[in-house]
Amino acid sequence: MGHSVSIFHRGSTRAHLPAESILGDRRDLAVLRPKADVVIDLILSSGAQAESLMAAFRGVAGRVVAASSIDVYCACGVLYGSEVGPLESVPLTEDSPLRTKLQTYPPAQVKMLQKVFGWIDDDYDKIPVERAILGDPELPGAVLRLPMIYGPGDHLRRFHSVLKRIDDGPPGDPV
Image (cartoon, rainbow, N blue to C red; front, side):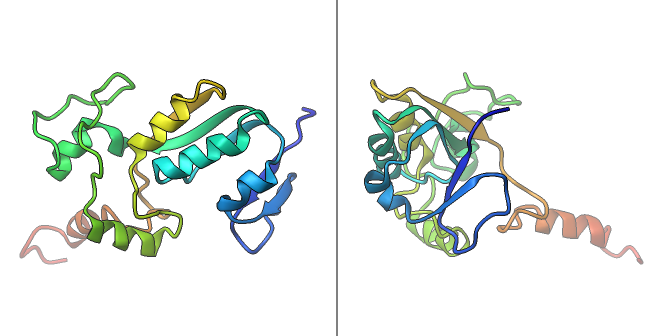
């Protein structure tokens, strides 16, 4: 449709897509400052990363779109015990209450996540990410809150124990 697409990624191999591939480290974006109408960032893990992204593209890009996650919701905090309150009705919406406490995950869990997802930094929290993306007065931003991934792409195997119990059948039931 006449658009030119560039993909900036940290990998060592080029994607086989009809797009320009730029390999690098996200910490170099401020130096590279690639021109873009829209920047889509799928792996911001902290407010500091989001602020750096906004600074790198302020005056260069027309908009930033960032992926967030359901862990910004108060319902997630209630699930993990960092927030008090009743269970939220589902489905959650953009208007559902957000967590009031930062750092949903304890440091030990963040360290475990870093082994699976190398892009997560020590200050992992999507609420400061959203604040930085949505709060920049010079560069418009949008946030997409994505659900948890489960299935073949879920490296954390979130539903493994549930599926295993279903697969095994009731206790004492011959297979």
